[in-house]
Image (tube, rainbow, N blue to C red; front, side, top):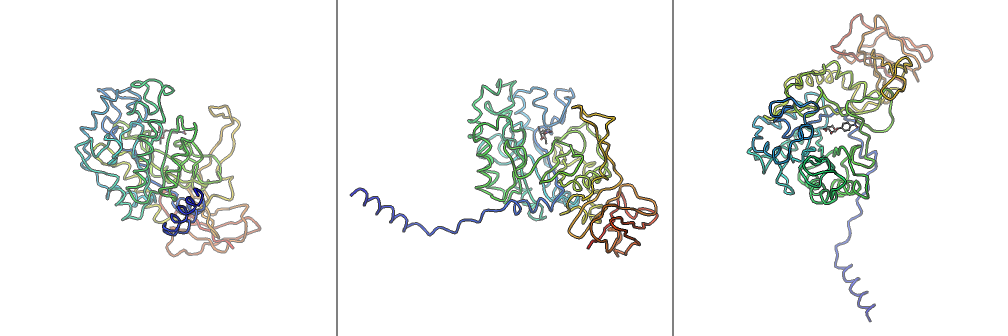
Length: 449
Ligand code: JFZ
């Protein structure tokens, strides 16, 4: 009898339920990575309460990266929290920030939704310690940025510090208020703040291109990292996971500002600064030049990676003018030469990158590497792009070329006029104009068959 009753109950329930929609086709990794492989150049933004002290606490300069000031100066939560009351970035203008990214030729933006200090830069219902509830600003800049990115067709992603949270008794990192991490109920913090906040970020801001987790302390225990991966895959299956969650992500994150010497296979990204800090510091004005940034971008692309380049806006909500000028100069170069960057693959050569130098050694005692900087090669099907940072005199000889080069021309020449060239086996010689046709660097395109 009981069996029949159970059978009836189950069949009735099955019939009453709406027919299941066909299972959503799982995305392949190639589909998920497609935009990332095309984009190549993104804007990183580190913005939070730390932009108020801007590297100085109680009249003393605090050494180190600006967003770490609470840690470096061992500021108690009760004191650091007070910064929220004076955070009023009235000059913040999402449209202008995103316009700058577009002018710079950047295709995605990743911004700190919550850094290690624990302060949410969006309207969170999980914790009142956020820019909407705890400051006189009373706005949600992430909402405004998401909308501006949509208008400009720029992808939008969040940095989220999943493990370190110096505001929470059970978050990782704050030992000066809360004692050693190994005595904390870390899962209590993860379940009550980090996980629900990541859910908010993936629910309330439209399509999120990636989540940039960071410093995965204590994340390799149990299913801690997997719980975040599950939240992402459930709420937005297309969202990429960076390389610092605590388990393998969708791509590798290289060390900060560290560009590999050689081609690296697979998907990867170099997070990098324009000066020596991520969060704004008033005394750091040691900016990289647009020439250097352009070289690093092409260098990274020629090795197979993406470049995520940082700005640190001020407490008024302004991106430092030097950063803006620098990035816009790079953007003007990309307007002419972007074909060699967006969607381009790595060099098929490699000798042009430099060579191992046994006369020097790195910190670990390994032989050094002498980087060569004259030119870089990037590729697309049927195309080789040679970007010259030092213009060759007269002609350029390229060895080990596979296939036949049918046309050589300069991207800086709108007419794409053919240059004189000859090919002898795998050696191609192109006759070049006496002076570089472009500013910063000039690109020679070789069409192959
Ligand atoms: C982390 C953060 O602590 C820092 O504040 C900033 O947000 C940066 C982008 O990321 O710092 C790191 C993390 C990893 C490495 C270096 C700095 N690393 O792997 O070389």
